[in-house]
Image (cartoon, rainbow, N blue to C red; front, top):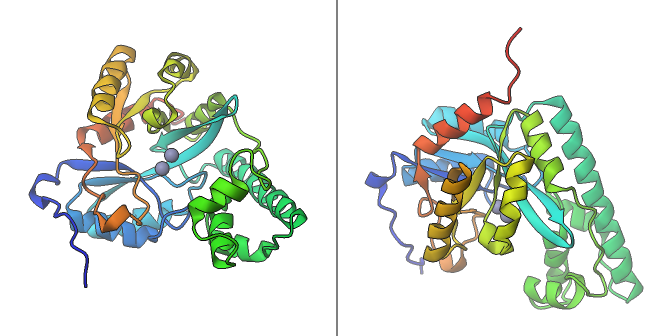
Length: 292
Ligand SMILES: [Zn+2]
Ligand SMILES: [Zn+2]
């Protein structure tokens, strides 16, 4: 039986944009083309492709967007760290063909792959053997990470669920855990600016450190993700106020991965006014070199 999904009110969406989505080029389940088709079906005006530490899906999405008449904002979501905590920095309107940005991401991806090897070695030391190539293959064309190890652990039958894999084997403090070499948010913001993009703080309520905002703004942060599925109504109001106080562009999106809980259709339900896309574009243009 097909699961009922909540209907998206298409007629309200032609002026709406979803500025946070993932494809198979990171941990999303849909290809860029399939994602853009789904966004067009929802009636969205624009969508930002923001894969984790990867921009390899952007070109395909741009091509599909042009065919389907939906605007695609080239983006990225970079995992950075403050002390031992993770912080995600979104980049909007980046030039995904920028050579410096590309080599930076490649170095970053190489670090991720090295980490996979050291986690698998630690698991091996406690008698849990997972094939390295199998995990890399699970990563597909995009960034490979711990979620792929979790998936392999389930498929090999060592744990029942991916959550259990994190809780018992590969999460923080577990026997297979290896700390990740992280970039600083300042570096993430700088490289986004280098690629002509605008940097924003993704889902700040998830981190729960609003006090970080002021220093992030000093580093060059220009946007704040106000609308997100993990934000309560109070969070949305608070981040609206904070964005206003610091003069930040208020972004938002579904953080769609294609695997919504209970089949709910989140694409099209967490959106911002399409005028935000223009604000981001205006800001991005200030990072681009003037033509000579
Ligand atoms: Zn994130
Ligand atoms: Zn995300």
